[in-house]
Length: 264
View 1 (cartoon, rainbow, N blue to C red):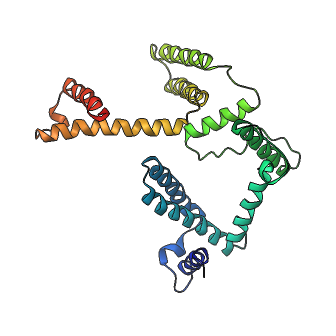
View 2: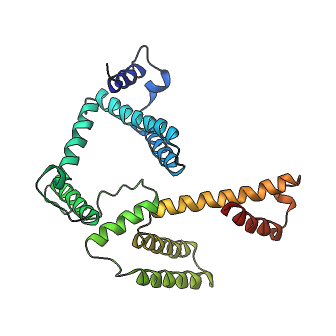
View 3: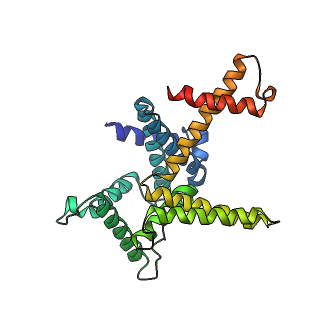
């Protein structure tokens, strides 16, 4: 028995009505979905930390999530794990005609555009000639930054895009002015949320034009803030003091000190 077959057997045993695990027997698609998302983020975290040992383990955890959902589907006579594998095999071959067929592409950008066009054709075929927006099929459960970038990319492939980064910067400046204007008055909180959303959306657009993943950029900024803030805490702790004992000016000084300390 190979490793994959062994994993499938373990999954079946865990779900066995008699000798299976009580917790695993109680789960369904909805209850498992949050774990699937969590495992995907843990894979991304291991990659960000360049921790190959952790990555190997996290990929196993993510694979188990696929097996879990496939088992749930098999119990409902919907599909089995092999159907999942066959489906992705077929899809990858269809979406890479320049590799598995006779078509050619000039570069990665051209391939990305061809990929999106192929997916659009598949969505329209599935809709049986009903109208399908080019924005259809972008998961609502994606993180907002990532979803914004996908929406913008789809629109850009259709020609709806700023011509250059300077135009995007001007749009950001415009959104900042509009938000500032709203802040200067007694504005409905929903109006402020709307203007702030427009500003964030424009910042994502800037990231896309710079070929930067907005979600990754913000994760990196989060890590940087955490490291610098922890430096403040640790510095105060070394003096037998807490954050409550320090003034804002002192914390600012330690913040600046952390930047030079961490750059060494």
